[in-house]
Length: 326
Image (cartoon, rainbow, N blue to C red; front, top):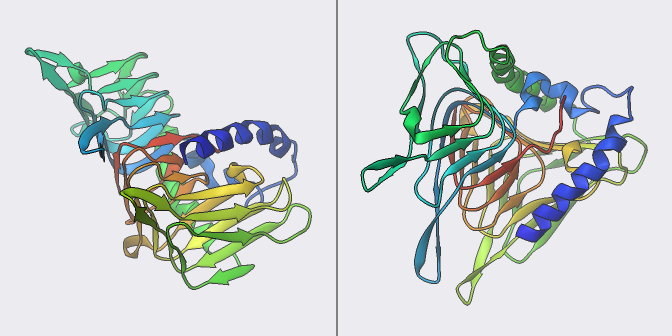
């Protein structure tokens, strides 16, 4: 599943020029127009907890890092990691919390009494005026700004609002296909195919998605949900009413068309949950799960943009910005 995800990430780069040429498109044909400021970030949430994951292999346990390729936007957060499982954020880390509030706490580890960073940030770290705690456990390549005047804080504030608005807009679209629940067992494949035609917007209403794995001789055998877009400029919106779950070695893969033209919208609020767990799960489409949705990702899984949710727990996945929104 690891090789498949990386291959599909390369396909996104090839397709982005094609999609960008469709100048007349708007929401929902162009998902970036639906998402507003939320589309600018790889990870968006209210309370963010980003830390090491843990996997077991051949009887041994290993720390795995949370890796985020893109910028991160939250209201508040706890960010860190253990030795061998340090969090790595390639771009900016932003928190909207204002004066008098703790915007973020960093956590690392000590070795022979010396602090070592549990988080590496390739860009800036900024807040809406809130304080940062334990910055000795963070290695920050850019500036650190807690003045409240950092220019991108307003974008981050907008992203939290726009994620919820986008989810409601997409959930209200008339469906072109409907499924009660989609359950894919380990070793099986289920395909959802869009309608033929030029620039088709496919809206698929689904009660829940559960892509499971099974064990064979001690190794996980994953299930696969395939998303097929007949045309390169087609769009597919998967409106999921309750839960999205993906297990060990399982995946949701875009097999035709670009991954940034597909989105999974988990829109049930406090009735919803997103759980992506275990070893080498892979999800090509971005996930939108705002409001009270419970979002948990763990293990060395591979995910595209993860947007929304009052509480997000990130423990070990790689999250890539597949949307490329300007």
